[in-house]
Length: 180
Image: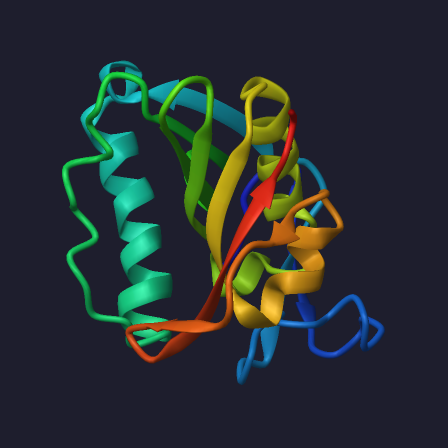
């Protein structure tokens, strides 16, 4: 990936990062993008233009279906619900990290479809999205997180609510951020 103009993304040869900070970054690849200034955006389905929606879904498919080989019906009808919130980080119109927030019963919410482009991992983009989702949704928030990310989700205050279970062969756990 090359950048034009004033570089906000810079290709950096792997591995200049410490072991702790590169966890999950560029697994198996030789390069990652260092992101200095990504723009964080949030919109409901009706506020998304066709091109943006396409790019957000493209990133999700790239990460979940292609990279993780998790074949499932990503387009489940929940993205277009009026209260579904899409939050993403982008650079020059290219989404680098994305998640969605579904409304649950009462004022509860569910965070899901959290992913970051392989080349942009290790920059804290998903953390910024989680923080925004937690700020904008005042009730309890729950999610099904991949097991290897348990401590990462715990750093935001989520607690484990279930035993390990598999989704498409990938170990997950149910987690909740309690506001009550």
